[in-house]
Image (cartoon, rainbow, N blue to C red; front, top):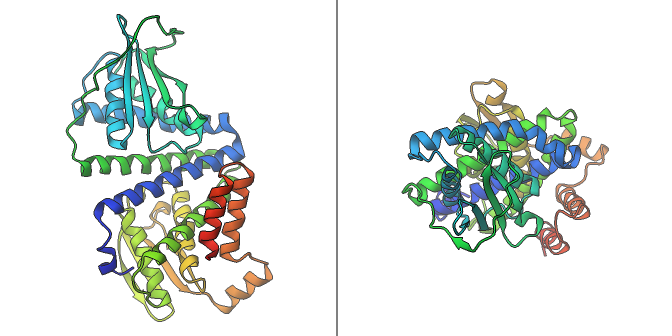
Length: 377
């Protein structure tokens, strides 16, 4: 995908794709941790990161967005801002004659998440945000779409209480006001927000005592996602370039999706090196780069299996810049793969899909659709 071809992709489409991929990265990281540690342990490992993030977000909203409520309306006001940014559809419900408040979420971009993700976002983050306003309330989750409910219900109640839903007529409350953000500004917040989710989930993943097991599962998932994107880019590319140049153009496209800035510093017929000088994840744990390397490897394998991509430098490991290299596989590389009985990339990705089907993470229809996508007609 050269620059002219990429020019056909709108800025909004680029933003939507980066958000979609970051959501997928986050969900798969959480699923990998849940598979290894269990639901309760996964939430416990994530709790300090997400609570702190909610607290920090509340302070930022107070300072930069002018949110000033010092009562239970603060939770509703903050949720309204997040819902606006994330394009969620929420309704605010009260009981006539009382101060009872509920938030009914009818749609949001996280409907396919593990239920644990909703606990982290709607309970732990929300409580951290409310805490930053120094009010004695908390959010309780009554039901979740991720568990099959028709819509999510969040209650705002006095902290530590067993407040029961009062009798009375249910009424719709006026929507909370939100800062006048442009769609571009809201999208920027959304991408930053979900990118931070991926980083926090990775930190929790690496805190687990068997983190290597979780990371290996996540790397397989990231490689599968890279292959899916690579095949998608191939189908949308109007002209085919030579192998090395085509792979490089797709990897550069991926860099731009995640606001990574860099230049090509070396290129010949069999090898190309690109140096990344600016990256929003440069202060993240090294496991973020390991996941991203697996993602780029998946793109490479889908486009040209005779090439491989690897990182020689990573800012997350203290290097001044990152540097990834695309080069032709040597004969020893190919021989070692055969001797080790390495599964061909497409077959390995299909095997990963089969594992997800066996765990109930995807339906048979989704498995067949993705299998056909990988194998071709």
